[in-house]
Image (cartoon, rainbow, N blue to C red; front, top):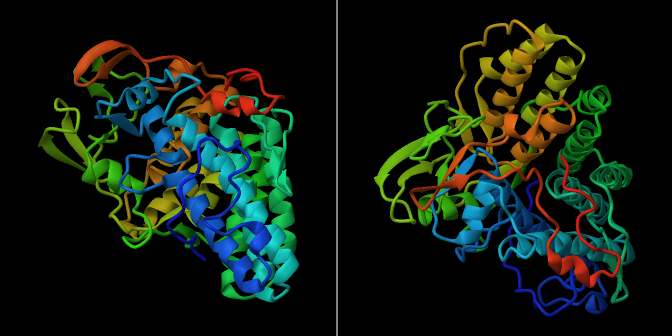
Length: 448
């Protein structure tokens, strides 16, 4: 089942952070039927999608988009200081783009909770039960994704009967545990045998396994996804009557995002995969020549996604990569290579983006080379799907590397001109807007 794209009402910036759990124009207090509860569910699905990959044409990003700029997936070809700061890994706690991205993710959690409460009250049907499971999936996914990219110290509060419940900030590891608990709850509702429920259940299992990987439980994660077919996809969908795929908006439409590369006018970008130059069928880049939105940069257009093209946040390819990393962690390099080359041996589909079969990769000579190869392949299979920043943080946290060995480093280019160096941040700061919570006093730490 694909996440639903719907137009959402704008949030009042003067409301408390936890308050905008009112989906669209529907107040939870006005929900007194299964039909109304289902409307809350549909709105929550749309908000989840928007929180990750928001596409209104109004230059507003989602979490995935901001991650892409922070890593080597993309480079800013824009004049907006916030996008350039993100690209440079130099974000402020009052950043005017990051703040609504953070708020949107928190509000998506709240809308899912409102939908759960309404569905449990008014829709006891099998479909209502399925929707409850999917809403717990949404909550778990968002909490996992936020914990993967924000600093230690995220408060995951909720609003109960209109009253904000301000919670203590959590370390990212505790955020992953919270996400797993949500998914375990989701699975208790996803017991139907129909195809729709099975699809949502597989999405829940991949989400749980991702959080297990984040916690270092590689073998457990591989077990969690062992029964998921490689062809499985759980898609976010887009249309011109709802909202656009934001990758299309910020790339081909307005030319504010360039494909990432390992060199620019300032010189070599250390650690960066040269996505723009690889000519790999998993990342299609077209050199459009001069100029991008900044008026200086050559525009390197990513052509993986059209305006209405779906994108899977969770897929069977991701399940295989989880199994592959478990092999890597266990020292079974041959087993890891078997999984990577099996993915390459057959044509794959990501949303509607078709990847042809590719030649096998040779056996790496040692574990360090194997690790480099694995994360390179992972970056290509999961390009622009909200995985790369977490992987770079994990290379620091779980694989013992330093930030300047994995994140883009060296001389930085801003608006087509050399401008200092890349920063040293490895996580997004929780924005100052969260200080409406009296328990929040900034990041606990900014470690990977």
